[in-house]
Length: 295
Image: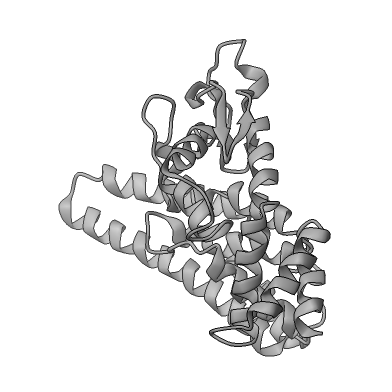
C-alpha cells in the first residue's frame, strides 16, 4: 500500500521506500534466496562454497534487519500510534521465528501483508491472513502435514496460542482433527501448480508461495469442538477459521491478552468480560473491543 507511509515525515517515508523489502515482492525475495542457497550448495570447490553460503546468510540477515528497521521507523515517527502498538501486539500474538529456515526473507512481508492491514479490523480476517501466509506455515511445520503423516504443530498452536488459549476447552482429539483439516496447507517456491489428477484440480489454491495441495489433504470428515466438518478441501479452512474465531473462549482469551497489554499484567476480570461480550456481539471487531477497553 503506497499510502501506508504518507503520514510519515518525507525523509522517513523515503528511507522506507528505498528498502529492498519495500521495492520487491516477498515471494520473489524468498525465491531469490532459495536460488542463492541452491547455487551455493552446488559448488564443488569447498572455499567457494563456504564464501557463497556466507554471502547467502548475510543477504538473509540484511532482509531481516530491513524488516526491523521499517518497523522501528514507523513506530517512532507514525502519528498513528495505536496502530503501531497493535502491530507490535499482533506480531507477538501471531509470532514467527525469523531464525528458522529462510524466514528472514519473509518476516517483512508477513508484517506488511498478514498483520498490518488487519490490526483494527475483524479478528477472523487477521486469523485467516496469518494462516494463509507462508511464514506461519513454515514456522509451524505445516508443509510437513499431510494425509497419512500428520504434523500437529500448527494445529496445536492455532488453538493454544492464537484463539482458544490454554484451558480453552479443546482436547488432544481436537488437535488431531484440526491437523487433519490443515493437511495440504503448505508452501511452494515453484511458479506453477503441481501435476494433479483431474478430480483434484478444482481444489487446488495458490496465493503467492502459499498453496493448498489437495493431493496432500485428508478428505475424510472431521469433528472439531463438537462440530462436524465435512471433508471438502479448502472450504474446511474457512469453516474452522469461522468456528475458532467465534468461540466464547477465544473472545475471553483475546480480550484478556489485549487488556494485559494495555492495562495491567492482571487486568480486572470484569473489564475482560465486558470486552469479551463486545467481541462476541460485533463478530470479533477489534476496534469495538478496544473502545470497550478504553471506555
